[in-house]
Length: 119
Image: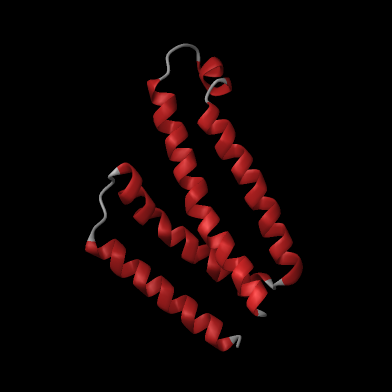
């Protein structure tokens, strides 16, 4: 994997928690709205923004997979998924225990092992 490919994969791994935070923001916004469900969905601009972000990141992932084998790119997606609890803790004050932190450290160690094999 080239340095450029690694940067693309790292960028995707950072885009994942951003998208999940946007969906959580949309859910919080939704819970404060009143009226019929369809009206709340159509007027939920954080949700519309999150869906647009989801579409852009899906296209970004597709582009990455034209350059990088799935088996080499996917561990970066796992690393990004592991960042979501940290983002939830920082932005939404959700609990973050030591076990979750330890699990994320193990995920990063696994990513390092997988990428060292592909070097």
